[in-house]
Length: 383
Ligand code: PMP
Ligand code: GLN
Image (cartoon, rainbow, N blue to C red; front, side, top):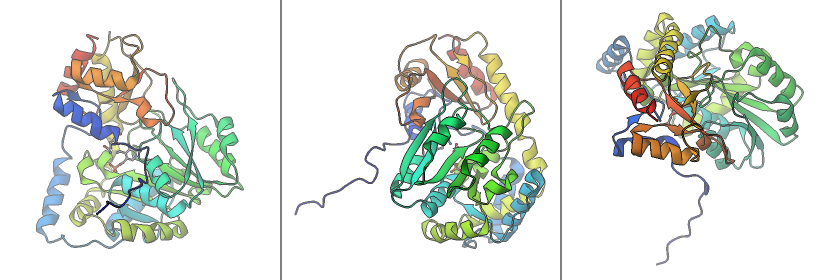
């Protein structure tokens, strides 16, 4: 019998670069600074809370939008940071990581033919989610070396078909953060337009050198038309737990939950109990900027004298390096070579863009213990 003819819904999408590079690192026993995850555990107190809730019988379905106690704790956390009191019942939904929050928000908002603006390099899950909804991606290029948004150029991309703008601050992979002026420019751009926003803020706690993170919640006119997404994986060194959340005004969140209830329904119950307990004390996350800034500075000090040139890193746990003094290979080939021949796995920045770039830039994750960072740097300074 002939096989049914299969037509891919994502014909141009391959396996995500994070799986590819981690697999290559594993195959060659390279030090893996590619995929963004810590090589240390979540705090012992949080692990103990999870174990406790597993034993206390918190093992059945959580409520569809998430545990009320966790949503309340998040409302308080964001009220302290942004002076914006969310309604824990209607404006917060716990998700299976930020990835599912992003996918669900896009699915709830984007109709076939809608245009969606991405800022490239862009986190790699945005585009396929838009395309699965029949949306059309319009990319604005953030350019080497400072990767800031060109708001005049952004204005030229907006038209009556523009439905959604997706952005990310602190920004993976470039480590840039949005300043107040960026948010104000966005405000001016979308005023009087029928455009929604998706603000991916998974690295909200990781901002360095005395700068601050501005959230969608800090701009009531913008929050009125958008979603903000977050990840406990990033905040609590627990990327394997896949728990995150989305914030949005009630009317948007109602649409979000219509999708959420059928693509995941509800999220890991014992973890939600543990996170609700753990969030009661802001000291459990307020230390993170100095913790990661120290790692960034340690790594840069170890890299002193290297031909790899660091670019400024204001946030996230990623550090970009310009390798043009070392090689003229394109970044994907260089990242493969570095993994297989020099034993350090990194991410080529072009993987985050739809148009080929001629920049010689790779991304390294510094969410690692000092011994591993020092071992990687020892190999890299020899290049
Ligand atoms: N957005 C960005 C910018 C990320 O770097 C990541 C990876 N952590 C995610 C979303 C997805 O987060 P999660 O692992 O919670 O799904
Ligand atoms: N966010 C992580 C990174 O940028 C990886 C997430 C994933 O592997 N899907 O490296």
